[in-house]
Structures are given as C-alpha cells and as structure tokens.
Image (tube, rainbow, N blue to C red; front, side, top):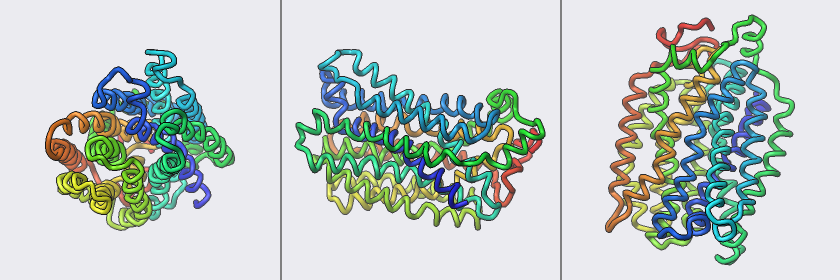
Length: 430
C-alpha cells in the first residue's frame, strides 16, 4: 500500500505542480506580457480568465479519462493524464509573448491551459481509485488521502521554484525569461512521474469487473441518467474547497502585490507556509474520517469556512506577514477538513463500474463552480476603496451552498469500496 499510495502522491503532485505554476504566473507576470494593451486590473482579469479555462476543461478531462478508467482500467488513466499535462505545461513555457506574435500569444496560452486542465481532470480519478480500491476497508480514508496531499506538494514545488527565481533574478530578468523556467522543469518532473508509475498494477476491483464482463458500456450516460442528483450534489459540495484554496493561493497573491504593495516573495512565503501545514495535517484528518465518518468532517469544514472568510479578509488587509499567514492557515485548515476525506468519500458514493467517471466528474464539477470563477470574481469584487469585504461575502455564500449539499449526501463509512452508498445510488450491481 505504501508503494501504491506513494506513486499516486508523486504523480498527483507533479500534475498539480503543472497546474499551479500557471496560477502563480497568472497572478504575477502573465497579464503585462500577454495582455499589454489592458489596464493593470483588466490584464490581471484576462490572465485569470485563461487560468479559469483549465477548470472548464477539467470536467471534460474527467469524462474522457473516466471513460478510459471504467472501460480499460485505472492504470492507463495514470499514465495518459500525466503525459498530457506535462507536455502542455512545457509548451506554455515556450509561447512567445504578445510583443512577439501579437494576438496569437494569448490564444496559444488559452489552448495550452485548456490541455492542462484536460489532463488534470483525469488525474484525480485515476490516482484516488488506485489507492481506494487497493486499500483495506478500515484504512481507506488514510491511504486515499495520499493523492489529496499532492496539491500541497505540487503547490510548494511550483511556488518554491518561483520564489527562488524571484530571489536570484532581477525583476527585469524574471519578467523577460525567468518565469518560463518552472514550466520547462515540468518536462523533467513528468518523466520522473512516468518512471515511478510504470510498474503500478491494476486495481483488484477493476480486474474483477473485467473478468466478470460487468464493465459499463457508456459510463457517462449511466452516471447522468441514473445518478444526476448525486453528481450535482458532489459538485456543489466540493465548490467551497476549490474557492477557498484558490482565493488563498492565487487571488491573494495578486491582491497583496498589486493593492497592498507587499513584495511577491513575501506573499509567496506566507502562502507556502500555510499550504505546507495543510499538507502535513491531511493524513491526520483522514484518520479521523476513518474513525468518525466522512460526512461529519465535511460538514464541520464547510461551517468553519463560512465562519472564517471575514477574518481571512481582515487579516490579509493588515499586510503583516504573520497575520496574513494566520489568515491563510485558518482557511486552508477548514478546507482540508473536507478534502482530506473526499478521496475515500467520492469513490464510495458510486458503484465500481461507473466509479472512475462519477467520482472524477463530480470532483471536477466542483472545480468549475468554485475554482474557475473565484480569482476573477474576487479580483472584480476587490476593485474599489477599503477592504474587499465583497470577497468575504462571496466565499461565505459558496461555503453555505456546499454545506447544504453535504447535508443532503449520505454517509458511506464503513461500507467497503465494492459497495455503492445509498439505496438511490445502488441501481447498478457492485
């Protein structure tokens, strides 16, 4: 299990490195380089618009790779999604700026960001199912939390590299070419991830499905036809986790540097400290999920998020590094209380023959609802004098929406992964 979970963690970390390095670049440099005729605010909004395209592509990626995972196995998903995301990320580092090729530059940027999202949309389902379907029943939450640590590791890798380059290079050098280096490094990381995953075995549950001839012929059609309510509820439930994470890791970088005058290296250091602690507590929270259930922790995380959004904005507005870090940490701890257990929770909600599609589409639908629009909406709401209380209202509203969705979902622990949870979702044989 340690070898399997480690392969999932490493691959997920690499893919999220690819995804996050774009978000950091969008917050710091992509606006002036690819949208130079816009005002600073409009340039940042446009850069965040291309950032959001990755989220719009993620549900499509989950449909594509979910079909592969339910028809041909979880293992091909792990390899194909990692390769696609890595190639797209390297290509972003090679795109000429607007000054070199004009309007073609942002168009290429948008296309490559879309391909990034397509690959990442397939990654989560494959990585989580690899661990969830191998894991023993009473430790499924713990082992399934390893892929959930991937975003924290990927964020630290991406922003650690950006932070190091920002410290070593002048502002002119970083803007001219330094921002490209983290994208090029994605190629090396992708090769390392493919090497680690090459020997991963197919899961026992998928082998049993294949041997018995019970694989779904059209997984997406079956999910939409028979489980549309569950799909919408899981997407709405997970929206707050995405919204909080990207408000902290993407919007706050732009707001802190542009509006509060904090140096980019200071903002990155504050956010990275909070993300590192989030990653460390993830398996601890997952153990609580194995003991007390998935749903109670999700409800607690949504409630904590709703209560913390106004303190988050107040602490950010101080521009004091320690207080900003405290604000970020409180938000991310609330978020991880939910996301530490969803690696076990979502697969348990779906029958095995449609699990890769159902869990992945639900997870990435939450990304569209909570992640794609948050940097754009928060940047627009923060435009004006005074603290950005509108951002706090926006995030609190999403937290309450997710709280309502989690309240309507069933508990799944301690049902084994081979059984779907809830009579309404048990139409297909396990």
